[in-house]
Image (cartoon, rainbow, N blue to C red; front, side, top):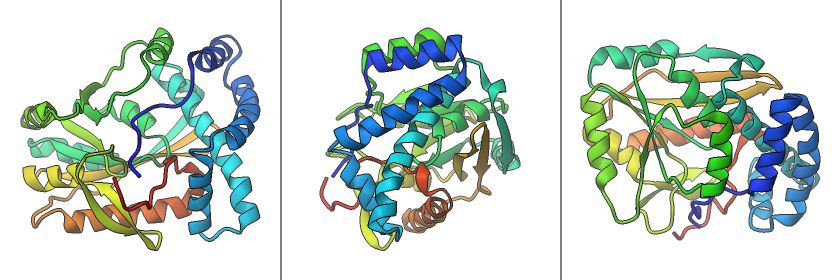
Length: 289
């Protein structure tokens, strides 16, 4: 099953959390989130069974998998709150460690630009906004399908996104030309390698013991342009601390297959280390798009 391209939540919910953040800080927002997470366990039937399936694939018992569904929703809510704080300039509320920042700098010195492949594990938006302090401009390629009212509510606090967004549009290849231009200007392109929308081209790889579909685009682009690529992640290591990482850059010389295997292997290692920070709420292992 493909992701439907829509961000969950409503304007009222976002407004309440923004009010708490602006007037009382992070802790009260986290406290309210405990009740919201419980609501999502019982009233999101299109998501809860699939996140439960994910925990079972990791080898957890039925009871622990059920408890982890609630914990996962809670951590997911925290990452959204954290994202708003960082985008609004409240990043001093958190501490960070950068593992592999020199790898991004190395890509910049090559003069050909580079591709950063991330995933919906951890808090990828925090990674994008924190890596912007490097000298290379970052362009995030995404399906910009947030509900317009929710987007405006968030931007009332965070301001416009300070990284460039390259929007993928249905039946439109304009983003490919934009990516090519940005690479020729020695800029970074950030894509997600773990999610696709219905109708887009996919490739198959074994993930956690069963074949799953992955988007073809990110891996094909890295192989086609033959620019350095790196896997970039940001994980919530504790309540107020983030661990960012960027792998040593490589160049895809012989097609995308080895790159795909390398990426899936990195994902498997990370979900075992941070099991609660997997945020793909659909049937990841369904074989149809």
